[in-house]
Length: 296
Image 1: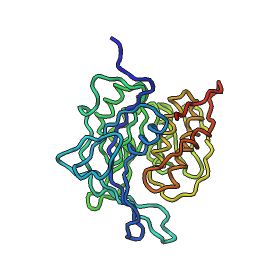
Image 2 (image 1 turned 90 degrees about the vertical axis):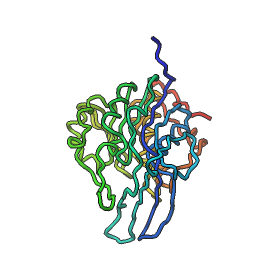
Image 3 (image 1 turned 30 degrees about the horizontal axis):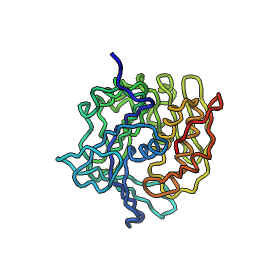
Image 4 (image 1 turned 120 degrees about the horizontal axis):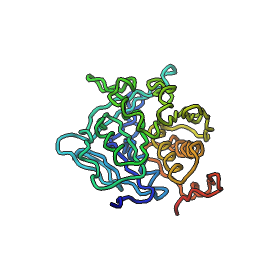
């Protein structure tokens, strides 16, 4: 039986959300959020076919290229990102105000296989059984560890993290192709153990990223950027990593491409606008000196 699969096809799983950026209690900006929105912007920008499985409520405020599933029972996931001008507080405090319903295995396509899958939940919407279904229908699965280890304060929704071994997903680690984490999240993984099971990529902000796999550890140089809002930078990084792998780049080169997309994102508020002329000017090549093929 012939598989129904497009070349370099991607399945992206994770909910859209409403993001509100606040500083000292004052709303600075409101935008479309959710890792799926940032990643789809990258994939669409380089013309990689993708199928998005994402849920919202009837209050969803944005027009999007990939329509979501609309839940009649819950509101769109809403996050408030709180920043402070106080010198001692440089990082944001992220709070989940509303959470849309989770994505279940039955929400995923039943009659297709995909070359790549991306598990990119932000608010606990990906269930262990949903990730397991993704692993069944995708050749290679990339997972952002935030989809697995985020937990939310029942009183005010403040986001915190639990160790991967306590998340309910640890048993699936050996089937994951790539696990992406921030430097903060990496302390909840046990990288030394995880790298024996899959390729672990840890993002380090302005210092680039580090690739770990078995006995290999490689630092990947950053692209310079002026940070305006870090929201979505890791998501765009992951999208760029997938683009590189999909075009046959070695993992370190694909991670460098991820750094590039991440650097573009931190310089903007909300969903980034990618200048394709700039992308075409970046000559990322694989060992055969073949261009990755950024589309017009």
